[in-house]
Image (cartoon, rainbow, N blue to C red; front, side, top):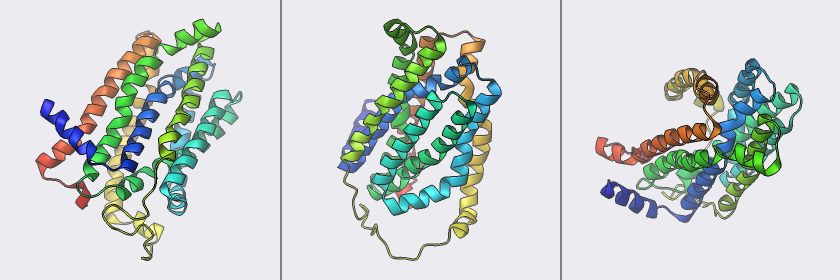
Length: 300
C-alpha cells in the first residue's frame, strides 16, 4: 500500500501545471456539490412534488444532453476548452438555481432541460483538455485521477453535507425539511463557484503536450460519419445498457434509504461518503491495473 501511494504521488508530480489545476477544480466540484447530489431528490419530494415528477426532472437533463451533446461538443471546439468549461459551469449553475427557486413544475422542468445542455459544454470539454495537457506517459494517470478526484472529494463532501440540514435549521430557524434541504442546495451551488478559480488560472496550451498542433488544419470528418462508425457504436452500446440499468436505480438511492430504512440526513451522508470513498479508490487504482495488464491508454 505504501509503495502504491508513493508511486501515485510520483505520477501526480509528473503532471504539468494546467493538469494539476484542473484536478483541483474537479476536487472542489466533488466537495462542494455533494449537498446537491445528496439532497435534491429529497427536496423535490418534501416540497410536495410527486415521485412521477421527480423521475421526469431526473430524466430531463439526460434527454437534453442526448439531443444537444454533439452541438455542445462542436461549440467547445470553437470556444476553446477553458472558456467552454467556465461558460458551461456558470450556465449550469444558473439552471440549477432555477430548479431550486422554481415555484411551478414547468419552471423546474425547463431549468432541468437547460441544465442538461449547459452541463454538457462543461463535461465534454474535459476529456479533450486532458488529452491536450498530457502525453503518453501521463495520460493514463491524469484520466484516472480525474475520475477518482470527484468521488474522493465526495467522501468528505457527503459527510459534511449530511449534517447541514439540521445545522441550517438551528441557525436560521427553518420550519420545514423542505426549507432545510433548499438551504443546503443553495449553499452547495453558491459555494461551487469556487470551482472556477483554479480553471481561471489555467493557461491552455496552444499545442498538445505530445506535440500535436491544437489548431490543426486537417479537414474534419462529418459528424454523421463519426457517429455511424463501427467503433463509435461499439463504445456507445455498453454505455447505453449500463445507463438504462443505472437510471432506474442509482439516482434514487437517497430516497430509498431515507424512506425504507428511515435513515437520518447525517446517516445518509455517512453512507454515501463510504460509497464515494470506495469508488474513488477504485478509479485511482486504474493506472496500476493498466500497467499490470500491459495496456496503454495514451496509445489508443
